[in-house]
Length: 148
Image 1 (cartoon, rainbow, N blue to C red):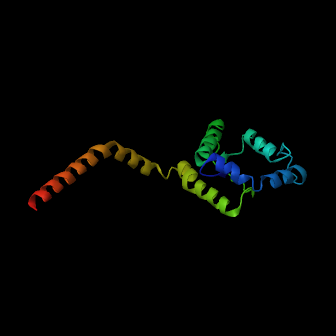
Image 2: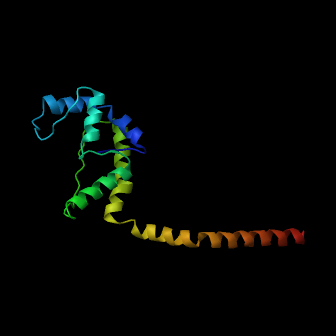
Image 3: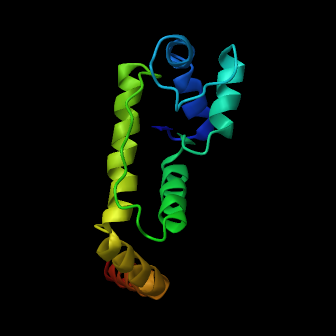
């Protein structure tokens, strides 16, 4: 998995080390369960696009993928292992982990439910409150200008 702010950026990011990783898996590693196809970066990117166990995209793509694994397993998929693969430079990888920590984990741990509930409640009452606030500001300004 590699996450970035956009899917295009994620694809660009992984090109740093994808070719070396794929060639290592194909020709060196004792990992017969991983059958890499392709012979160049575009072939490797196509293989990744066809591989249902790989997510290259945004945090929303990661959430969607993990939810599909939970659904397929009838809720039995309780743990998720991130595989560190060195497809990206270190700074880019740090951004990936920040996106995962800030968006994906809270989604599944449901630590953001109260915040989302609060946000929804506030959205429902915001416009009337903002209108009343603006009316109070206008009224105060008009009253203040009359006293000058």
